[in-house]
Image (cartoon, rainbow, N blue to C red; front, top):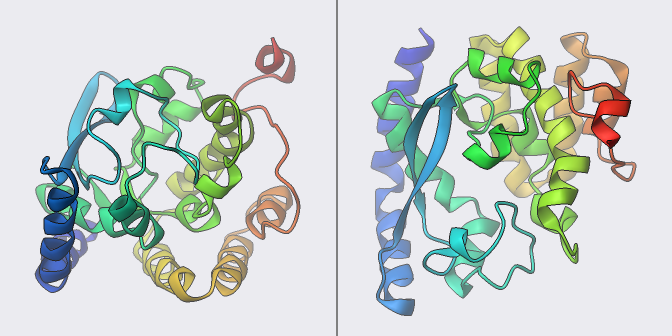
Length: 241
């Protein structure tokens, strides 16, 4: 049933969004006359990758001139790309990957190989479900670029303060995924476009209804500063050494 929902949702989404995507593809091409689509290698499971389709929001070959994590002030982001990122337009092109069966509408966000190389054994459980366009972490960390703003080492800060919580949220989803949860997460993703505060409160209610750990629920409200934390499955001493 989940696959049927994915196929129907992807087909409808691509049909509705294709005119807007075409406009932005033209704008991206006009700014530097380079391909408007970026094919991003992402890890599907251990030893297997797939080609994720994204609207290009950065200069060509950005992955070769900087890290995997991107702050809001990253010089590699183009002026059209800033709009694409602000409204998450590059997520809609990934409906093609959903249609192909490489992704789902809802699931942990797919990662680059260099981040997966840092995974603990516990984090590898994230591959028990298909990667998705949105999930708990997509709503909670929609401001990832702002969190990393001004950091001298965005990759390090990502792995210390964002990845541990993203992985916890992803693992919680892997243990509790079902169509009713997917439906609420899709709705909260839409709500987040108009009201981040309401979306975060909705994520907290959903986590609470699924008996999530209290620290996860509290963090999801994003009312407290994020602190460095050990990733799931890593002992504190191992993480700090």
